[in-house]
Length: 114
Image 1 (cartoon, helix red, strand yellow):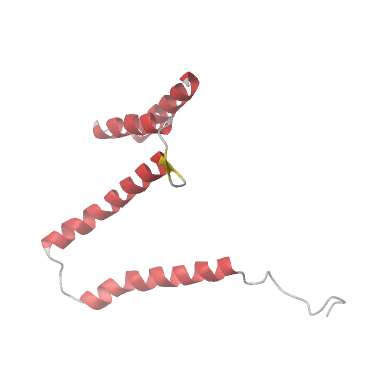
Image 2 (cartoon, helix red, strand yellow):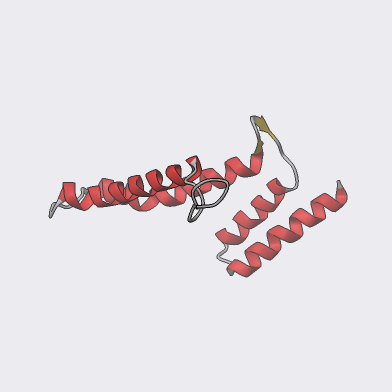
């Protein structure tokens, strides 16, 4: 025991640590719920197709939202043309490095012009 009180080992548990642990437990529970609830039953083909496409749609929505908004305002800046270039390059199935470099070059060029 020190002069300031009992010796502490490690950092105190903060609200962020508790939140992280709760979210991790919730994620694990949700991942485990599918096999436990469905058992050996299979999903319908419509649900299976939706489940396969859902992650890509959510990622696309996240990218567009983070590109075109700042706070609660709609903002069109150099990121928007860069996103369009990246989308076109992905559509023509360019390599990932080309997509990233093309988007970065477009954003740089637009920022230089503005």
